[in-house]
Image (cartoon, rainbow, N blue to C red; front, side, top):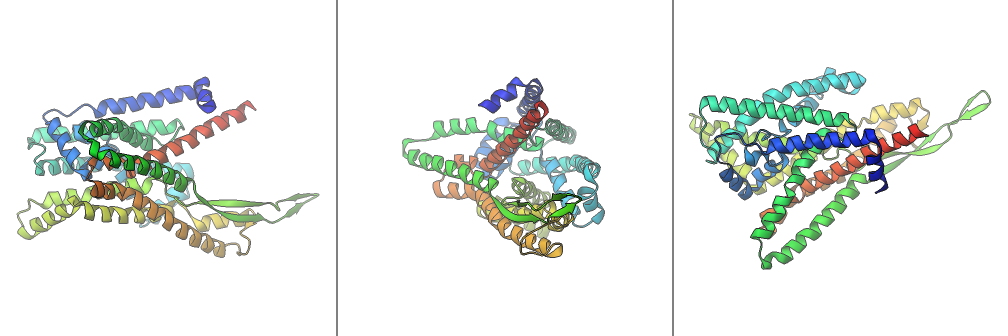
Length: 422
């Protein structure tokens, strides 16, 4: 409470919070504006009865079930970021730009990701509309209406990307993460209302179990998100004139979940494409291609297959993002330059190998945990038959992770203010 009071007492911090709140309100209003010519009631019924599409709708903040201006959410921008991260493994110049050119290089890298958002939004919008038309949820659109709709949802996605950038500039947390957070939280009241209206007394024990599982998941996510492996680091003594420097011992913290919530978001974005591509070719004039596409589309609507692929992708992206953001060789080089070393390990390459060995082992724990939490809603629904349990797992993971990240950003702002006062 003391920190909350400090936030609202300081005018600059209060202005930042109100600005972010205003942008999130703009996002929520735009998510409620439907595109003309679509049966919104039929769309909502479809998303309530389909968990896979319901999960996509959850991350668009309900924009997909409303067929609104923001139906794509920040998906195209995230997909563009994924493509750029993957390309760093192929093109060394991109890797140098992202990791070695400092802030200017990262700005160029992010600018390319933003430019990729437009074609990806057009592709993803067309794929989503075609998919819903094949499911007979959306009526066939005339060519002019289809083009207008695609341009509208692409503009909405670009606007949302811009709002995310504005939020990030205020230093109160990652803008894209906060937008996804707002979309998820906005769906909680309707989920509770639906549960209360459609539930029966016979399901009360299941609701109690769900509440216990939710609390346990929140506690586990908080524990894993904050868990660290501390690597002891010692610094050699250096004598300069009559003064002695160094000789201290400290720790290098390695997080168990180094990638945070990014692997979940990456996996969800990638999971959109197989179904869309299969939908494109399901009406092909080549019989074998059309049959194969229909089989693939059927597989990705099967919750068991979807859950297995989802679990695997989360583990892969956890290792991938950790490899991109955590450079053992660079850390070992910096330690050596500063006169630091890990006790019992020689400086340089042996230290880098030691750090790689440890990070690979602890990342396995974090990756399996993330994958388990991601598929938890599917497991609970198959065990209980309650579709309202989709709010668990992935949504809880993202909400808790974003809250922890925002708390750290706010603490940093308050600490900086205290230092300035001192």
